[in-house]
Every structure is written in C-alpha cells, then in structure tokens.
Length: 627
Image (cartoon, rainbow, N blue to C red):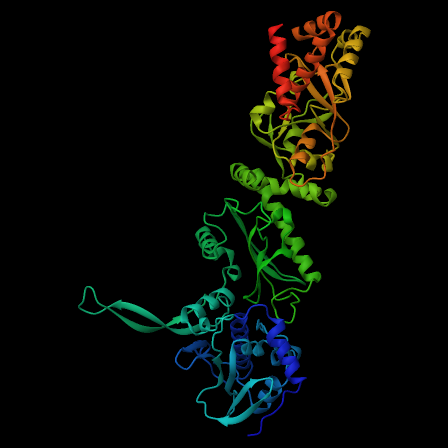
C-alpha cells in the first residue's frame, strides 16, 4: 500500500514533538498508558449506554510485553479500538485528539475521566522507537487494521488480523548510543519502575510477565527461573479513598513508599475539595528536616497528578517557600497543563489550589500548637527558621500568615513560646515586647542588658537565630505591641532617683573624656540606667542593632563592611569600677584612656564581637593589673 504523508507540516512538526516538547524520554510510557486508559474508559462508557454490549470488569486491562531479542516493547489495551478512518484521522494528523473530541461531544459522563487532551502523546513513542506499529480492532467491527510508521516520512495503513477488540502499540526500540541508553526500555524491571513512578494510579490493571526465582522442587540449594503475570500498578490511589476506610498506618506506609521521609511523619492531613476547582491532596509534615533543607540544592514542591497520572515530581508553585518543608501530593483534573503534560500553565485553578493548600497548612500548624504542643515544638526546632525567613522575605507581606506560628525562648517560661502567649502574660504597665539577642540561651541569660528589664518582672524573648531580629524588624509589632531590644538606647523605663545621680556635670566630663579616648568607636559614653551588677555594656541607637551588624559582617562576600551600629558605651556608676574611673580621671588620665579601651573591648566581648587589636587589649590589661 502506498505510504501516506502526515496531514500536518510533516517532518518539521513531528521532529518538534519528538525532540522539543518532552524533557525526558521515559515520559513516552506514561503517555501510551494514559492513551490506553482513555480507550478503556470509552469502552466502559459504551457498555453503560448500550445494552447490547456486555463486559466483565476483568475484561478491562492494559498489558506490557518486552521482547529483548526482537528489541520490541508492546503496550496493549482492551479498549474501544479504532476503525480505519479513525486510524487515519487520529494518527495521521498530529495534534488531533480523539479523547478531546470524545469529551467535547459531551459523551464522557458518569465519572469517566479522559486523560488525553492534545493528541501528541502517541508520537512520544518515536523518542525511543525507530518504528512504531499500531494494530487495532474497533468495538463492533469485524475488521482490524495495522498502522505503521518510521517517523516523519509518513505511514501506511493495511488490513490485518486481530482476534480481540483493542489496540496494540509495538515499538521497535532504537539501539543505544554513547549518549542515550535505550536498552533500559527493554528491561522488565526498568519498565516496572516507570509504571510505578508515572502510572501507578491508573484505575485499570497494568499487567506484565515478570521473571521470578524459586527453589527447585525437592532441592535445598538449586533454584529455577519462572514467569508470572504481575499487576504493576496500585490502581486506587489512597487519596481517592474515603478517610473512614483508612488507618494512620495507611498514611504512614504511603509516606514511606513515596520516600517523602525516612521516619514516621510528624503530622498528616487528607484533603478533598469539590467545587469549581476540585482536587484531592495528602500533606505531610516530616519528623526531621532533610539534610539539605537549608541549602540552595533543596527543591520544594508537591507531587502533582492529573487523574492519577504523575505530571510533576516537584510542583514548587503549590507551596510558598516558607512552607517548603511540606511533603505530599495534589491530584486534580481541573488544571491547565502544557502540551507535554510535564509542566503547568499558571492559571487561576493553580493559584486557587495553592492558596487553599497554604491555608490548610497554617490551620494544621495552629491546631498542633493548641492540641499537640510537644509535636509542634519538635516541628519548630526543625523548621522554625524557614518560618522566620518567610516573615522577613517579601517586605513582610507574609506576616499575617506566619506571625502566630513563630516561637522564641522565654526568660520566664524557660521554653519556646508564641507571641500570642507572650502578650497574654504581659503586665498591665508593660509597653513593649522585650527581646535580647545572642548565640545561645545561656549567653543571653548572662547579658548585662537584661538586668533592669528582668528586675521589672518583664518577660524577655531570647533571639538565637541570625534571622530573628531581621524578621521582627519587618514585623514591627504584634497585636499593637512594639518590639524593644533590651540593648536599645532608650528602654523607656524609669528608676527613681537615678537621673540626679548619673547626670551630674562631673560625670558628664568623665564620659566626654572617655568618648574622646575611644576615638570615634562609640557615639556616646553615658551612665547606665539598666545595669545593676555589671560594670559596663553596649547599647545601640537607631534601626541597626549590634547583633544585626554582627550578622551582616559574617555574611560571605558581603557588602556591609562599612555598616556599623551606633554604639553607646554605658557605665554602671554604682559599680566599684566607677570609683577607679573617677580616680583615674582626677589623677592619671593616661590610665583612664587604657581603662576606656579595656572596658570597651570587654563590652564587645560580652556581645560576642571581635576586638580590634587583641594584642593591645592584652597589654593594656597587664599594665592595669600591674598598677
């Protein structure tokens, strides 16, 4: 029979289908299985609407066959098949979809979900096959036909023999090259893994003869190989089952099977939404952060399915970065996919699902805070930093979502607390939410700057992550209460009698001399209103705190080398050290210069900052000790 040409722009268009649309060659098997499922759906629908057609449930299946010697891979279905005219129309015209027409004609009802849309999936077979043969017999027809093509040069259609209704797609697999391994598509176990990966939840059985091994009868040490028919797919996905049918172990086993994590999930939720945009989802909060979670290499995202067919392994658009720890999947028939069904069009359905997923995650986390406190603390210890980064990012636009979820260590409760819990315990006369920053809880508890606030009986939040203060600066306030660092130049706390004592003209002269001795390293030296037992500390004025300066300077390749907090050196005039300062001012101003430098360096060390000249500092200490 004469070869026919494709009805599209032939070679150029088919080359585009094969070489440009799909990023992974293995996708071809997903496409052919989806087409086979559609064909069976059509048969099933016909059986529901035509009483003359009788089908048994066991009649509907897909079979995959491998012949390594002949280098052929066959995908067969027991679906509706095609007439000669349909072969010519559907396979002779690239981007002509019989499944799309089936849906457009309003024939698909009663829950029949047709997967195919674009009419290009079949041609993905040419990515791995040098020749494709289609043998098909249509439902209600006595004739069978064979469609055969080597690619863009055209195709032939000839009569043939076929005993049963349905379609066989036989691919002559290409030979492997240095760049491409095609032999994997002739390996039964590789095919099985691809079915599990992409088509595990196709609702019809996908069968294949698999090689097994067993002991020979009557022998202890001898084994023999045999072949057994195996169903490769699970068919009914867990997310489409009723929640009442499932036990916690079902969700945990699915979590392990999908390799979402190596431990049991900390929490899971099963979501089913019906409406203009319908979807099912299972979301997991892992027990532990992946080893690369806080690196650039980590890829967030949920698995995305359309009608049970895997479309994307990691759909990052479904999760905001600050909820990137969530694992799981979403399945929806309502998403607009691109022509290869590998990526999404950014449409309203996707945005709607992403918004609902975000709201669900937040509600689950709030529920954990209330009802599963220990679990939430465990979660926060693993993933709290990403919530704080979320607060800081995008100019604080996410604060309404995240401010109730963050936690900080409390000076009074001796554990992590939420901002709402802090507010609930505030004293009547307390204006601010007080916080202190440092490397760890123990170091912060020893900071001199905390003394006055603690003496007032006010709770202090301990900021130990480098992002904490940046996030709070963006948040600005919580429930109309501003945040105030215990190292702030103005604590807005008054103590009776201390103004007269610390603001005398004599002390001002001493402090002016000390500031000059420090040669621009501090903006001011003054009497402290906050120190009780410690002789010295640093305070900061302005938006940039001392801790923020430290974080910025620690960043690699930073551009903040010249950024400095406006430091104020505060002296405890009630401490015995101040008597030595006054004595040195009256009798030995060179000594006071050394005292000023040493006390400034000590204040830096308390803050965890480097001193500018450790050798000079050591020498000054030695000289002062000798005196």
